[in-house]
Image 1 (cartoon, rainbow, N blue to C red):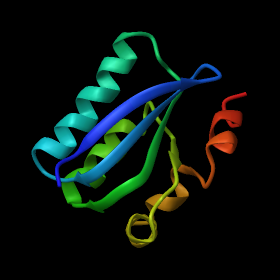
Image 2: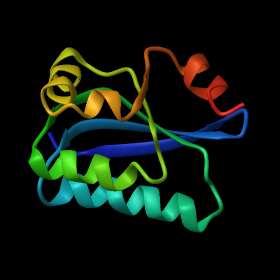
Image 3: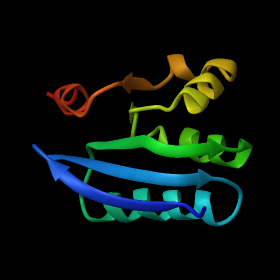
Length: 108
């Protein structure tokens, strides 16, 4: 399954809904390009919704870290992604939320 993204606005915050695999190649490029495109359009409040992401490789982790300067909020982690962030100690770096309302509220 390839990586797919969509974005939407909720109270001035851009939610990027990700699905599939964030991996070396297409997956990480799509995420990087999406975040850069949003920034170029003036969107500074960005939340990555990883509810439908079922796999992240080391390149995908690198892309999340790269996106950290713009998006410190992660939403709806699957157990697999949650465990990966725990193992890599990145769970403490990101502001992880379990629901969208909390993620949007964190920008106020």
